[in-house]
Length: 114
Length: 114
Image 1 (cartoon, rainbow over the protein chains, first blue to last red):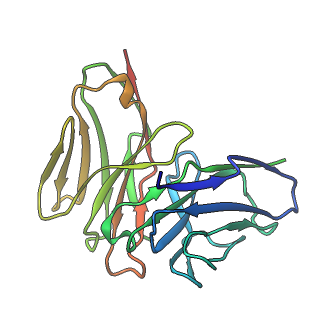
Image 2 (spheres, chains in turn brown, cyan):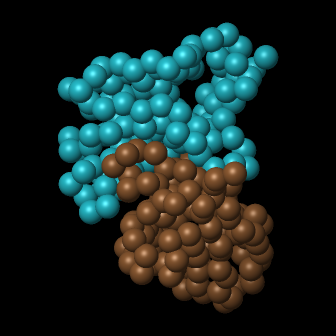
């Protein structure tokens, strides 16, 4: 089945630790995205990548880093510089970029900082 | 900053009733308005979308109404069912922005009572 796989589904982190969230897609989509979801704030864009080896900051990139070494993969690292990392993180992909309107989302990773 | 304002934050509707969720925007450059549906523990999925050249789009029980002059659009769910209970997000995209990213509303949690 084609889709987006995020792992882990749940993650606990101690303050001061970096963590990496995995996102893999087999839809052959060019563009990939990371969103953060907090109650009442909708989905906020962290980073996006439209081609391999290139990525751009979104609205809330501070404290996060990404890489795009393969078309299928777009991992997100939540660094210790992120002041409030507890959130639900969603990875998405689209064929050409959101001009088509349709983003395909993974099932999310819930990060809790202890 | 581009914004899409969504209301209400939560909504309770009886089975068979009409659910109405409203969104308002400021940026007249927005040219694509999708709605996403998210079930608990899952990623959002595209439900229905509209472009500003039409005032209404209907797909089954779901209808988008678009008022370009008022810069508002809304989602109507007719004959609401318990299975429609989910969080709904409106969004908008601006082709003048690099990457043509979607800006999401804050979300509406809908509960349909049996």
